[in-house]
Image (cartoon, rainbow, N blue to C red; front, side, top):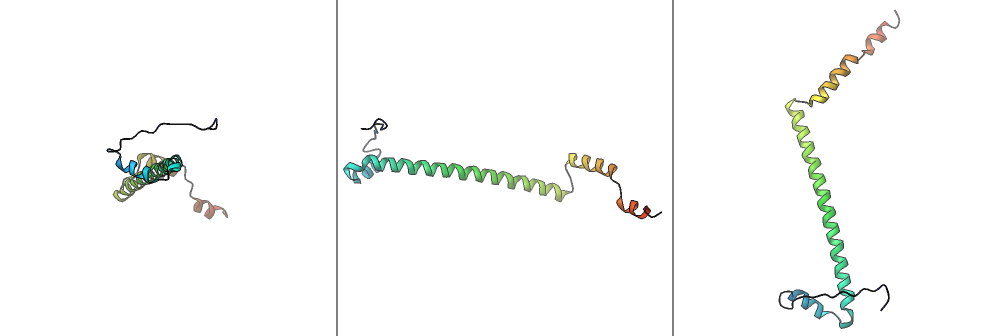
Length: 106
């Protein structure tokens, strides 16, 4: 056994975990460890994908929900008070360029 090899004991109940027992018994005798490692890697990969998909789905659902709320605000004619305040400030500071252009030649 190599210094980097690790031995772990894997315990299961033949009756309670009969599906696991049947699977292990169906494997070639000298390949149990190899197939158990493959099964664990497969499990890890599927869990990571599931976790990633759940996170992506949550973010998408959150964004859709936010957009739906924004759309309802727009439909109802109500706008964010902060946006209204900013628009009002911009209107006070707005210079009508068309008036300037008309008076350029005078």
